[in-house]
Image 1 (cartoon, rainbow, N blue to C red):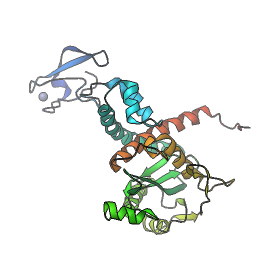
Image 2: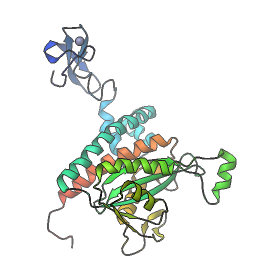
Image 3: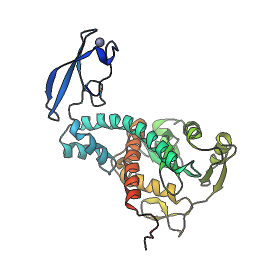
Image 4: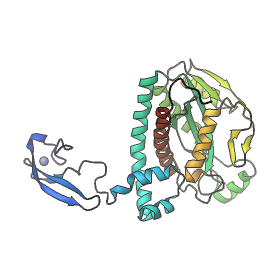
Length: 304
Ligand SMILES: [Zn+2]
């Protein structure tokens, strides 16, 4: 009865709960304790109040989480773990909810261990839903040098350039939610960052106004970016030293690891909410990977 502290129906305390046998859970071959409430007579089990309650395929969760952050598409993951593609789609949403909580906890743990964050790199990642006539922008903030993501939003923007007219003709006027999304992200950042933080940004005209509004005491430096160096990786620059390396590297990495953000892919985002879910899972796995790297690195030795 370890995990259960109260009755899920009448909220009776643990003292009113009695053990009531076991059942065998076929899905992961575990023996699950049944519990009965003496107050209301309701029977339930140790599994009732767990996050995996009512899942039929618990064993796949960790693999699906890893694969979603390792550039696999839902169809391939479904084939690998032997489930229907709809199960993978459902797990994406479930894993994302848990990832969001974990990411907040990990970020707080990092701040507790290393002190307030001094420098942040901020930029927008461009992608699209369904067709590149319907672009999306992902405002994204990372800690300078350590590349730990601080937060992001997904917002629709109107098509630009040569696609603007085609997009309007085919899909009508598309709203621009980017300013609202950046405002929401910065509201969130206010709770995490100290007022005197430093922002490294590119030449986007909205950014200085945004910083002034939400961080009046913050400083910022603008770095106009060069052209990308590798075909299909606009974010990795040719220059010897890129001041926005952390955020650009994060974008290149996320494009390589989140299947629907690959350039020249036929896996596309159908719903912006699912893209946000997918990025949350990616950040969860990325933080684990960065943590493993940090532990492997021995202190005070060079990599020569
Ligand atoms: Zn009860």
